[in-house]
Structure formats: structure tokens, C-alpha cells
Amino acid sequence: MKSLFDIQVNGFAGVDFQQRTLSAADLRKAVDGLAAHETLRFFATLITDAIGALEEKFANMELLRASDPVIAAAVCGYHLEGPWLSTEPGYRGAHEPRFMGPPLLRDFERLQDAAGGNIRLVTLAPELPGSADFIRKLVAGGVAVSIGHSNASETEIDAAIASGAKFCTHLGNAVPAEMHRHDNVMQRLLARDELTAFFIPDGIHVPPGVLRNLFRAKPRGRALFTTDCMAAAGAPNGRYSLAHHELEVGDDRIVRMPGSPQFAGSALTPDEGVKNIERWLGLSPSEARALISINVADAFGLTIPDLTSN
Image (cartoon, rainbow, N blue to C red; front, top):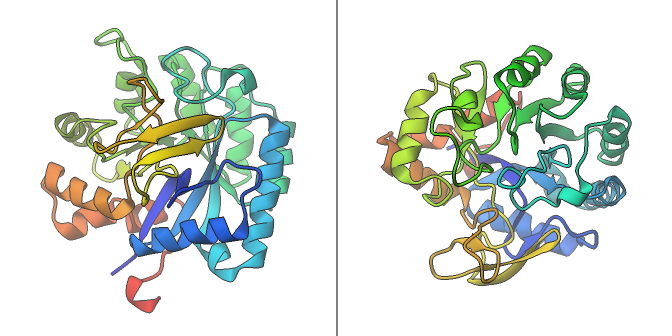
């Protein structure tokens, strides 16, 4: 049986990947925690911060990968979510707007150099100035681009797809609670058969009934899954950091800003996600598993090992 593969892991087992002081012991704890939940490969995800801070984090992560072959094998790439996202309220989510701005190739090159060339996926908002050319250059360099935390128009989505964007990041989320019922970016992206959409199957970010509708709306093979998990995943209830935020998780396992209904990231583990996909979408165990394992790896030209071989 193939291991699971998650392209959006912000932290796990009490460990926040966003910290500049992330240690080898902490990262190994997260790696081992994910392995205990059937996930032997994943993209470590860094979210919006100052370019210099992100550069330090990537450089540190590369040192940690070099120090431990188990870490190096598990962290098979990076997902950079921000800082080139929409600053509009409702679209930016838990990302810090003070660090956001239009994408600059020189900034990405700094980060890619620090990451040892291992940034494999970038989430951005294509309505930002210069995005089309930026996407084109990233794709030419072998980096996949996903649309997320965005309020892009039809024309801006057209330009992103023409430039090589292929994915949508956690579609159905990072949008305001109230929008126009028809003319909204979620509907615009959902209608684009060229784009493969990732969904979070925790029943919180997208309720089960809504997830069924969204899944059915995409052509076969154009709907995949991720946890978008943070440090609370694979860990007890309590308070955990996510970059500049302290978040809390209670008995309902919803990750919230303390004292607020707003939530950020998830406490979902990948194996729990498989069970939810199977149950809510009426899929067979093998079909559900493929949507957060081999089908995801195939989309990025990667392979994942069998659980029985480890």
C-alpha cells in the first residue's frame, strides 16, 4: 500500500515549521509523527513572512535535511504560500498583510537559492501586478503555481492559466464569509477545468455536503486533497503557534484564533482525511486513498514509497 502524500503541511505533532529556530529534533519529531499517520513524504509549507525571514527559514530547513537522511527523504520539497497573496480582508486568511506585495523574480530567486532549488509549489494571487510574467518564469524553471488567497477576475485567471498555473489552493477557503452568490472567485476557479483543485477534507473548512458538490463539479482527476495541517495535527488539544499567531484547539479540533470564531489551518491528519473522503464522497478505500497519495504525487512528477517497505 502506497504511503500518503501531502503538499501542504505547515507543522505537525506540536512542531511549527514557521519558526526560525526550528531544530533537527523538532523536525524529526514532526516527520516521525507524520509517518505514524501513514505519510512518508510531504511538502513542508512556509507561509507569508518578510523575504529575509523566509530566506533564513529555508536555509535552516536545508541544513536540517542535510543532517538527517530520514528528514531529507520525508521533506521532498517545499510549498511557499505567500507572500504574494491578496491583502483584502477575507482573502488573506491568517497571512500577515504587512509582508505582502507584488511578486518579484529576484525575491523568489533568493528564496529558491536558500531552499537548495527545492521549492516545488508556489501559491499566489494572480491579480497582483506582474503575476503573469512571474508565473511564466517559475513554470519555465520547473516550479508549479497554484492560485489561492485571491480575488482574481476572469481575465486575471485567464492570464494565470495561459502562463502555466495548474492548481487551486484549498478551494472553498480563503474567501470572505459573505460574497456575491454567483460572481465570486470560488465559482470562477471551480469552473476552470484546466485547474486541479485541492480541498481540505476535515468537514470544517468545507462542510461534507459542500465538499460533495465541489468534488462533483471538477472533471475526473482534477480534484485532489490536502490537510493544510499545522502544529496541532497529531497533537493534543491546546495552544500552538503558526508563524506570527498563537492558535488554540479544543475538543472540536477546530484551529481558532483565541477568543475568535476565525480559524486558520487544520488539525487534520492525512489518514483521517482518507477516511473522511471515503465516507463523505462515497468512494472505495483505494479511490479515496489515491486522492491524497499517488494521484497527488503524479501531479508533481514524484514517487512515494510503499508503507510496507519502511
